[in-house]
Image 1 (cartoon, rainbow, N blue to C red):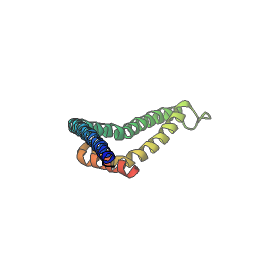
Image 2 (tube, rainbow, N blue to C red; image 1 turned 45 degrees about the vertical axis):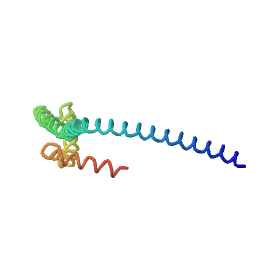
Image 3 (cartoon, rainbow, N blue to C red; image 1 turned 180 degrees about the horizontal axis):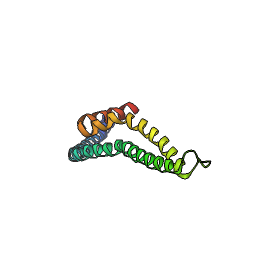
Image 4 (tube, one colour; image 1 turned 180 degrees about the vertical axis):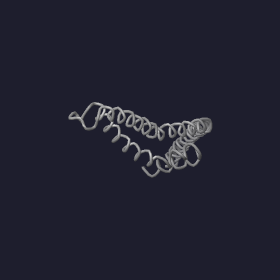
Length: 142
């Protein structure tokens, strides 16, 4: 019996030693990975923040640019349509139609631009606050 016990004890001891070695190696690899990830994150975080702010500025500026383009189109084509004469039997001239469509687009882009005003101002004047708001929106969507 004691011979069997010694064999079992030896096999168990070897197994524990192997598991301990595997665990130590895995922990060492994990620590190396964590250290490299930490370095990567600390190097890339400022660039990521800059890119988020730049994207936010451009994204929230687009409705304002569209608003000014459409309102300019509206006034130019409304003036041309007025020269064509509003009282003519051909009221639906191309200039009048373009003026009407650009007027509608002006209204819709104004609504969108007003909705994005807060985000645009944060991206331009308070970039850190914009990044915090951006991160909180991502966390809320999870």
